[in-house]
Image 1 (tube, rainbow, N blue to C red):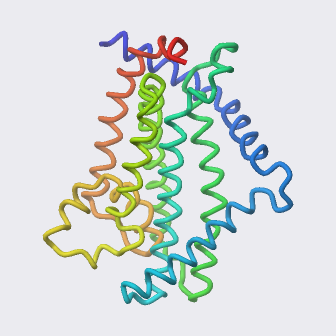
Image 2: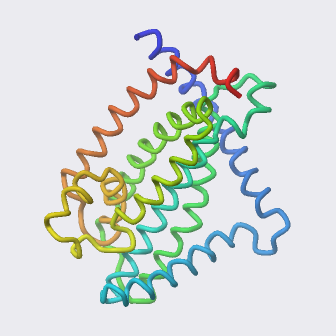
Length: 265
């Protein structure tokens, strides 16, 4: 078990040391996607802004929630959920789409997962610009608690990294898993308070949809500070434990099957 852990960690450490390559590849993906577009990557921000506006108008009126309260909540939640789902779904294909590179060039395999993560962090930065604009529209201040969202974001990315790596290995071996992951994430979107606010939930359902929902805690440690409150200690605890346990299991699993990834492609 120790040898498996060391084997997996060495590859991850080597990829982290060469993070510049993952950054270059990730930026190249974004440029390729918007190569002949007049506005380029700004379409990312525009499309997200339109979606937030439409969902805010519909669900704000549907739940009879003041727009001044609901739209900032929806904005942060939807942007974070987009980050989570794209990293996990693209992480499923992180190795398979890089088949040619893996078979021809000797690189730490975790570099391909870092490429997915970096690409989506850049997209997240484009999208999060919308939040200050929403605050400006409603004349809402950015509270001092927002500084804690940086710590929450780092912890979120630590968790998403092991999830993407684990899914990447599994999906390379079993090609049906990406479709399963995509459908499960779609269900989780409606079960997680993103387009609805937690206070609308009956108490009898709060344990299942809030306390036992890891996605709620991962979003809440970033969203709550931006909205002017602090996440509960329970949310911090869940995210830290999730990161520690998840990375330990993933490194062992990765160390066991890393050498087989090229043969599965």
